[in-house]
Image (cartoon, rainbow, N blue to C red; front, side, top):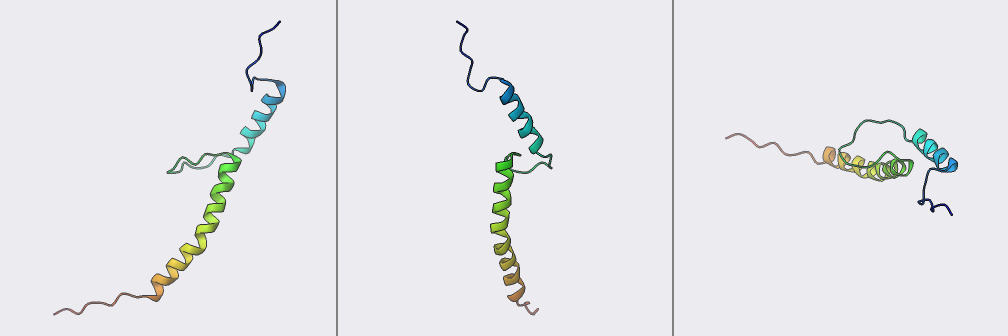
Length: 74
């Protein structure tokens, strides 16, 4: 009786899956945080960027609306 294979051993199907995953992980520049380069990680980053975009725009508009008053010199 042959020894049982470890889960995720290199079957033909697993090799094929790993190749497909490697092809999907597009090269991109290094980030400051360890976010990963997998399809799920990149879609999560895209979602977070979309959520932050309106807030960033609102903050920028608020800064323009409230101009600091210049101090007069004595």
